[in-house]
Amino acid sequence: MTTTTARPKSLIAVAIPALLMATMAVSLAAWQLRSVLLKPTSKPVQADLKKQPLEPPLEALVKASPVQEPAPQKPIVSRMVIDEKRRSLTRLVSSIKPAQARAQEQVKSIRSNWASLRDTSLKAQASSLSAETALTEAQAVDAKLKALQKHQQELSGEVKKLANAPKPHREGLSGFSPVARPAKGHEYHFEVRDGRIGFIDLEKLMEMVKKDFQVRMRLSGSPRGIRSEVGPVGEYGLAYEIGPANDLLSGSTGFGMKGWEIVPAREPRGETVEQATLPFSEFQRSIKRLNPHEATITMWVYPSGFGAFRQLRDQLHAQGFMVAARPLPEGIPVRGSPTGSLSAGQ
Image 1 (spheres, helix red, strand yellow):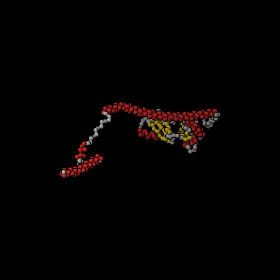
Image 2: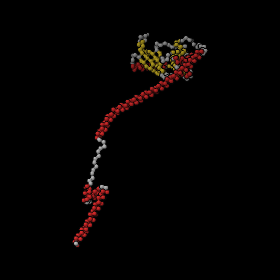
Image 3: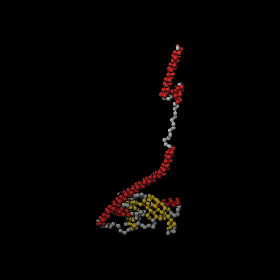
Image 4: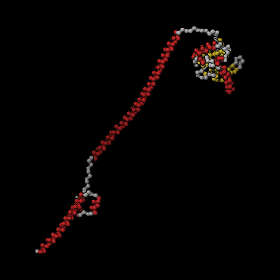
């Protein structure tokens, strides 16, 4: 009886410590499992887990719940839809190309039209300027025409007044014969033109012709003669021609003057009537050295010099000079030749 009672007491004493240890082991495993589940997975924790192997119950728990990878998602749009969209895009690009070509042609046409419009605008501006210039010129011509018409009317009125005015009685030249006589003694030539009178020193010019002809004949020895020009002396030079001439009396052949022509040296030339009447004028110096009984004054008169000729002729007649008039048309120079006529004066 005593032995049976002692065994149960020894079993209880051994079982109680074993149960406490098992309980503590389970609590420790549960605490470790909780810390693993609550903490984020990181390299240090994984390193610690590798260094500290789990208890067999924890490893079994981890193996029982493996981590599964997510399954690949199916595409939202199918391949057929994508192919159809590509074909639509290709058809759209193909339809756009003709439109682009037409647009480029339209751009070229617009540029060409713009250039044509610009040229037309420039031509229109030029035409406008030409029209304005022509209008201005026409207005100027019209103004000149009106001024000329007004001047013509004024001249017509003056002509009518002069025609109606009483004419003065003509006075004869006392002491002079109205019949022209051939020039006597030496002739002294004057040009009367544009109301001016100029002295032509023909005597000195002829002396220069003789010297010039002799020099040129020595240099050229031409049997055909010489054409040359000398001067000027004062305001006039002289062009001459000397050629072969036959002497009918002796039958010999030589050279003679074919003709001469006065060449004016400048414009205007000569003196006005007012200047010519002054005591120290060229005209008065030329006249004072002449003898009225041995000299004839020959005046080559152009239409624009008739008024001056009349005034100077009366003055020369008053001094006793014979005056010969040789009228010339405008543009014809003073000329002379062996076959010409002598001056006739009054």
